Structure formats: C-alpha cells, structure tokens
Image (tube, rainbow, N blue to C red; front, top):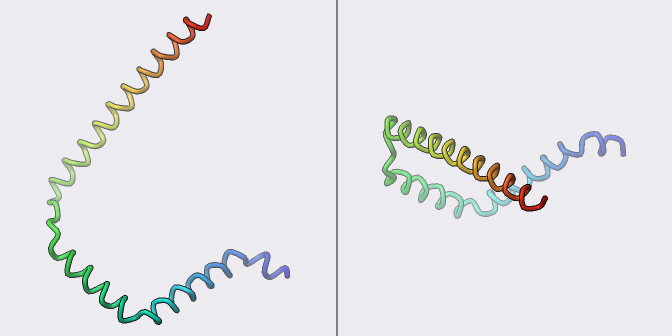
Length: 87
C-alpha cells in the first residue's frame, strides 16, 4: 500500500500513457490519416517572417502595457471617488 501512495503520480502517468498508446494502436489508420492531413494543411499555411513576428510581438507588448497603465489609473481614480462618496 505504501508503494502505491509514494508512486501515485507515476502510476497515473503510466496508466495514461498506456491508455493513449492503446487508442493510437486501435485507431492507427485514422491517426495516420489525421497526421498526413495536418502535414498537408501546414504546407498551405502562410508563415510570418521573422521581422513581421518581432513587429507583431512588440505591438502586443506595447498595447498590453498601455492598457495596464490605463486600467490601473482608472481603478485608482474610481477607488478614490468611491472613498469620497462612501465617507
């Protein structure tokens, strides 16, 4: 019993891996077809260039920072107004 308690997470992981493998083996033809279809679709994807990716990432960071500051100022303002109203 102590073995089960000490190795519970490992046992669950092994059970999950065995279950997944049994599903893959049972449905091998379907899994193979799915993987081939995914591979075909990924060839059709228009991937961004490195520069486009960097630009988009910087834009997300700047907009997120701006919104964080805006929401912080709005929260601070509303809390001060509510303190004045409640008093």
